[in-house]
View 1 (cartoon, rainbow, N blue to C red):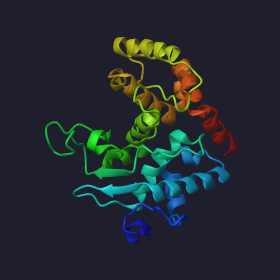
View 2 (cartoon, rainbow, N blue to C red):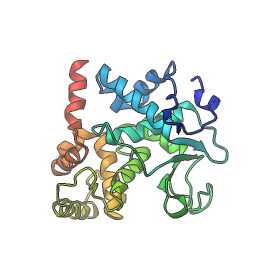
View 3 (cartoon, helix red, strand yellow):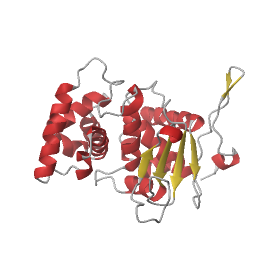
Amino acid sequence: MAGIFKRLGQRIFRWLDGEPLPLPEWQPGWSDYLQDKVVFYRTLTDADKETFEYRVRHFLATTAVEGGIQVRVTDEDRLLVAASAIIPVWAFPDWHYFNVRSVFLLPGLFNARFECGEKDSLISGMVGTGPMAGKLALSKPHLHAGFDNARDKQNVGIHEFAHLVDGADGSLDGFPERMESYRVSEPWFALVKHKVEEIEKKHTGISDYATVNHAEFFAVASEYFFERPELMQKKHPQLYQWLSEFYHINLAEQYRSARRSH
């Protein structure tokens, strides 16, 4: 990769005197990288891939991706962070993550103090609150692992950006009202309660972490939805239907259509 972001000093592009500074140029190899690593991107038409790439550029022009201690941030890292951000809001072309200004990559699991290598360093991703509001921390190796294995229903990048989607209405409560302001939340939370009981009683294929609270259920379910939509549609049809309506996308059909076209 060309390392254009390093040459740009890893700064966030800002509006200046009413004129937008240019978006980063799309570099040779970036499309191939997304094609290889990001299943969602592979399922898009050529025209939609161009749109996805534009939105990657826009995200990276407005959001800093920086490295913590002992982390060298590469263009590949930034592409995966941007993909994690765009996938959940693909059906919302005007979506802007006003609730995150920067993403920090750490060399591994970390604790609440962003320290790696400690006994309580068990976190792979975290949306900042309080003094850390507007910031998102991710373990770099776990970010990559989420895209390297597209069948394990786990993707920490998508998980954390699902939290940001959920919290865009001002409340991290597991119901993204900014997407669904016209619907009441009671039927959704009734389904969540039922699914949590299922997870606690038997193997469902949904991570136990979904039982922590409503916000984590939404984020965990979103990982599953975007990684294995066809499996979710088969195993958890009601949950799949809700997430399809939240995200305004029939992802299982998109994946099937992509296979048919090839």
